[in-house]
Each structure stands twice: as structure tokens, then as C-alpha cells.
Image (cartoon, rainbow, N blue to C red; front, side, top):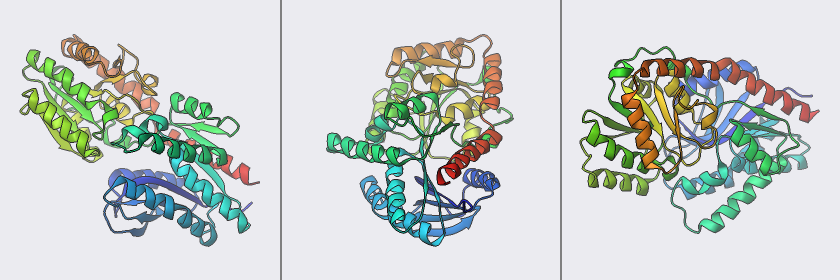
Length: 390
């Protein structure tokens, strides 16, 4: 069998040079000892090609999501086919079932040229729900059917699967992906930015509440603001920090309006997107992290918060209960339930020994994710891919 040459394809945005978190990831994966290529988006309107641990071929980040989807689905198969023929790529790693359809098309066309390619399809979250909850979608029914057809096509052609949690594994199996080898491991996190970080404010004295993630409806930020509006009357020093990119402009405008209607403009701060070290700084000043999502895969921000010794409050959905032990390392609540979230927030503020809970959360998170386990997960995926080529 020929040596492996691996190409990842996904919708991640990369800048040149890579930010520190992405640099650490690809530097670690370079230990796989195989040539690596990445097809994704540039952070900006200009396409880019550069090498930094891997060879990056980045499409321009067009201003509207439908244009980016069209760009990736039209150009992605052609780019992959070119790399198969010229760079001898023989493993494609698609970072969702939707990109799996792009990889599947390239794989099937490559057969016409006598080239065998293994397709790895990853699932990082609830792709059935997320496809409609990332942003407002017109003709939602048609959009769902088209994306479902793409996902089925990608999964049918997959040789190997990756899940990040029990829930994503079970979803793949419900979609009929039961015959392929499946490897399960958490998504990448820059653990070094959070692990062992000294807190700026002792947990028992901290008053800040933190949300970290993109501002989209399925993250339930509106539920958090509803609960905080009531908590603010009881905890005059409490402050809510919303850290994350305004991915959905309409939803973000609604959140600003919701904050203003509640008279919380001085108590809620919209921070925007930040890098991992800056996020870690917010965590060392906060009392708890809140993630009120309606669906997830296995959100790394919860693990990052726990690595920081922060108490997480998160919804009992998808892979979250695999990380949080309710009442021991954090609190689990139902989705879309401001009253339950308010109760959990009150408990966090009244907890007599919150420092011990934070210490338990840190200890659990540090063994839950390690760089060695992440690297080993990809070694297993590539081993299965190599077997499929024999």
C-alpha cells in the first residue's frame, strides 16, 4: 500500500500565520508522520496558500453563509480531486457529514482515474438540529432535505467514522452508519491555555458569570439573559459577560434589545470573539460558566472551564452529561428553562464550599482531555483508513 497522505476539509477559518491554538493542534498532528493538507476558509476575503505544519489551501470567506456553502460545495470536490491527482492524497477527513458529501464526490470521481481514496467522516455535533439553528434559514424544509441528502451520501461513502461523544456516535448509528469502524474522542482544545492557570479572583469571591460561544439561537443565550435578569435583583455585584462572535446578526440584535428592555446595559457586557488565552483570563475571574444550549456535540468550552477550576452550569443535552456530574463537578439543567437556570445560579452563589467543587471539576477535566489521547484518536482513524485501502 502507498504511504498515507491526508487532507482535512471543513468550514473552519484559518489565518496566516495560524493563531496559537491552531498552531498547537497542527504541530501535535504533525507527529502522525504523514503529509497533511487542509482545505478550509481563509479569515478574510483573500484566498490563501501557506505551509505551517500542514499545507493550507484556504478559500475566500465570502460575506454570506449561503455563498460560502455554494463555494465549498462547488469548489471543494474539484480541489480535493486535484490534490488526489497531484499530491497523491489517499485519505480525506471530512469534518462533518455535510463536508462528507464533498469528500464522497471526490472519492468516487477519483476512481475513474484509478485512484483509491479512504473517506473519514467526523461528527462534532447534532447535525440534524444545528443545520437549522445556526442562523435564520429561508425555505427551511427544502434546506433540511437537501442537507440531509448530503449527509446520507457522505455517510454511505464513509470508510471510517469519528464521533466526539456518545450522543454523536448514537446519532451516526441512527443514520445507518453501523458497518464502518468508529473512533470516539473529544474535539481539540488548547488545554495549555487553561490547565494550571492561577485564578485572578478566588472562586468563592468571584461575582462574574461567563458565557463563551458564538451568538446563535441554539446556544440559548436568551434563556441565560432571562435568568440573569432575575438573579441581578438578588446579587447586586453579579455581572454577565457574553464572550463570542455574533455569528447570527439578527439574533445578536435581539439579545441586545432583550438586555436593554431588562435594564441590564450596565450589568451585561457583549465582548465579541477572543482567543483562547484571553478566554482563559475571563474564566479565572468568573464564578461559573453557563451554557444553556438546546443541542451540542461535546462542547469543549465546558471542559476548558472545568480545567480552569470554574463551576459549569449547562443543559442536559447531547454530550454534556458525559462531562458534568450533576452536583459534584457542576450543574445540569433542562434546556429552555430560565427558572431551572435561575435555581442553579442561586445555588452557585450560595454554595458553602464552591472551591471544592471547582477543584473536583478541574481534576476531572484534566483526565478527560489530554493531547496524547487526541493524537492517539487520529492514529486509530488513520490506521482504519489504511486498512480500507488494502
